[in-house]
Length: 267
Ligand code: NAP
Image 1 (cartoon, rainbow, N blue to C red):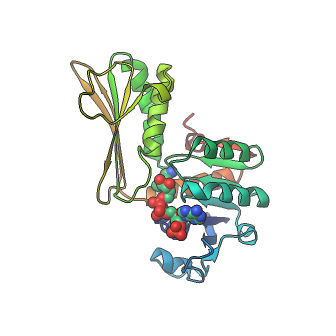
Image 2: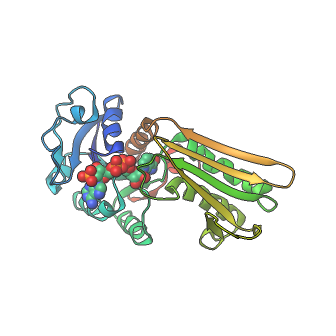
Image 3: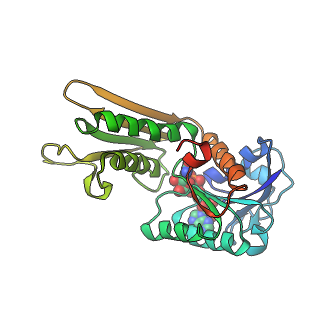
């Protein structure tokens, strides 16, 4: 059994990760950690997740706690990333990172950490989205030079970053296929007299509403037809199960930076 340590255990993803570990045949809960100031410290992790007691108490994140797991899973917020990576490095533990909305500097922390420990970093841990990343590259290679390309994403009202990390990953996959630099060709929303569309641009549109778990569409439109490739996540468990697949895979890997596509053998 692989002992999984969950960082940010009280978050939406943290709670679902506890539930996923409970239902997974090859993993068990090493620890479930929260901030030092959290009122959840000492609560049974199962109760926090709304399932049966797990006999693992929620703890404050520390060097000692991190040592009790084989693999760490971090779905928190960007401001927690550096500390979480430092703890993983100090304990020499592999880490699966799902946090999105990271700055260039934070992405560099991940690159640096991966020189010493195994790291999986993915904006989306669902099988369907990782397959979609391949499908949009195929569509871009066939239609991309003629089609207007737009990426439309929707998430719940609480999501903090936009466009989603997954929408950006889809944009990068398409731009790389077409030899475009996304930082130069991306258009984030339009307003007023925005003018005619430039053919080389890739547009992003963001919806934030209710409890949408995660919808993504890549649209390739010419003057005679439209191709839409759409993925809809209906439960956060799909991300949590994918993260556990990544954790089990990562335990057997050497230091380095890996994607979910590496985990699933899609590259
Ligand atoms: P959430 O409910 O807001 O939970 C965030 C967690 O991070 C909470 O436990 C929070 O603790 C903790 N946290 C935030 N700032 C911290 C800090 N400075 N130090 C320590 N802990 C801190 O968010 P969520 O919906 O679970 O999503 C978490 C992340 O995963 C987001 O970036 C989201 O976009 C991403 N995500 C990725 C995937 C994927 O497949 N890659 C899927 C879904 C979500 P407090 O409550 O104490 O603040």
